[in-house]
Image (cartoon, rainbow, N blue to C red; front, side, top):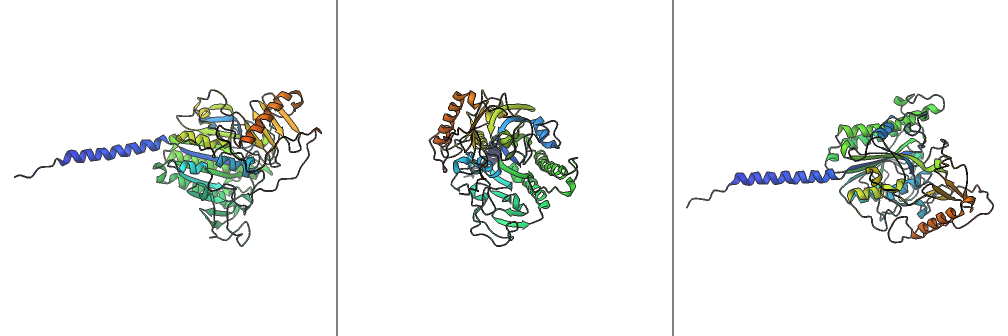
Length: 475
């Protein structure tokens, strides 16, 4: 009996068709999830980029480019007017006042984000993202015991018990905070101690290396870039000397800010080079106002409860999704990164995560029918709080004094009108108390604050006491 002939050719063709289908399906699935980059400048004031103040003395060509190619927000706010608490809000989507974090941490401060808390990177990891943080952490690291040597030059090879890789980042390369800018940590150990002027160029190379890695085309990624400029130390590399065109004492500062903008340019060029531009949402902002530099019409600067302390530049580009050259006047918060990422990947946040994060995706896509947020809570380093709703901003000073401003008519916060608008003061006070009591400002089950919050003290003196600087809270 003749052997049966198996028609192998059609099977082979079908097999390769199946592989092609699987490949295309996987590629399409990846393409549906955009890469997300969040760039956070350090101490950049609202009035410093040219796209925010035409008369600025500084050069920010890459931020200006993003304003032309994407969306520029005019009413974006950090969670606080100093560094550490704002970064807590960015990574967790929660107001830092809920854990009593008003001041900033030091090199040996313990982590203030528990490993059990859902963060932006751990959320995105659950949805197939590679996650990386390159730059300034400033949210505490666990060294186990205090290392030997100087705080600014801990011996190379010293390992940490807990680093940013403990809260969702696959990759970390950077430093703890500005006072040890030359001590670089890779993953969970000290990699090198270098001259401060060398640090930003090293970070830039790591950023470009990450983006040029072929792996970036295989999986979506989340890249968090907390840059140092224009925060001290002011250490522009030699190739940036005089690039800002400023002279005198502002020359190095302007060059340093320009170098930070140049790093942003390296990111944009890498996205173009690797053909990642079209599927990447990039957002750029700052952690608080400029240090010691107020920019009219805003009142105050870094550390202030007034607008100059926490109203930030905020730019976003997402080709094909965000229209080019548009301006958005909606009030948003940097805390909103978590809920925005969740909506992008189709995730529902659990009740105990992102309690104060609201998705700004409708703003980005131009589909918002009204304000995305009901209100925003502000804080300064002294522990003074404020609540913003619509044009109204009510400040609760720790000594009991209150001030009310209509920012639509008085963005400079020059005229306290609390005495003329007692009903609005009462309404905003009730909203503040409800937000505190609920442990959240979004819809969901009530949560517990880890620190006492109260705005019920009322002063009749009409005078604000100076108060002492809050001690660092690293619990």
